[in-house]
Length: 258
Image 1 (cartoon, helix red, strand yellow):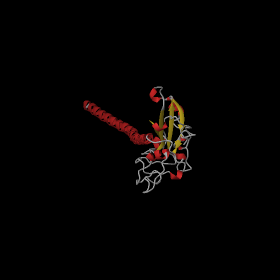
Image 2: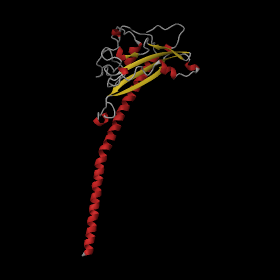
Image 3: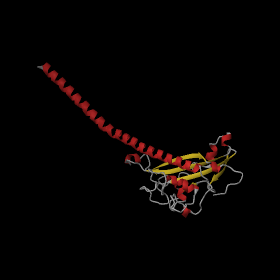
Image 4: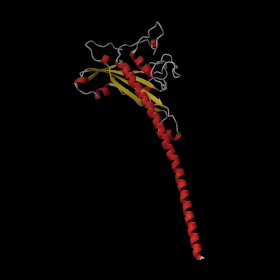
């Protein structure tokens, strides 16, 4: 009888131990699942951001390609004539280098995002441009004897969409983050930055360059409250492209100031 009692106690201890192990496993699982879920959703949010970033980068490259084969000194001072087109039959839209280059970032004609008829007919099918926070900055540089001799348009050396669009309330968007705090005073492409990246080889002695920058406020797709404690929402995305511009190369005669 005592031997059977010992065996019974041993069996009870084993069952109790297994139950405690199962309970501990369930507790550990309950603690880990929320963390794993947050990490998974964070990866999804990063994927959305990278997708938007690549779309923005493609747009800056397309805008730089557009600008690289055009004349930066073709400028219209009458902003009421600016239009991304297409022009009506029998009419012609005056060409403005800076505004027409920014039109690459406009939504395609006929799309749901095409709310401003003067800023449509572009290549931007995915990114909703917000004139209250976003911005396009275009800079042109003339290189003579491996030195940056001019930055166009004068006198600032850059052209910002927010300073020339119909919205007169939100200017200099590129200077601020998405929360409205001023975080920069010069565009990324400025004479000092370009000069610092020039080589002294013969191929860079006399050149022209155009710099395209896009400042975009990315709204988190999932908008997780816990992520907002670490990452601002919206988050400023800044993409840029620099490309040769033959029309800005130095010439024997001075270029007219835009």
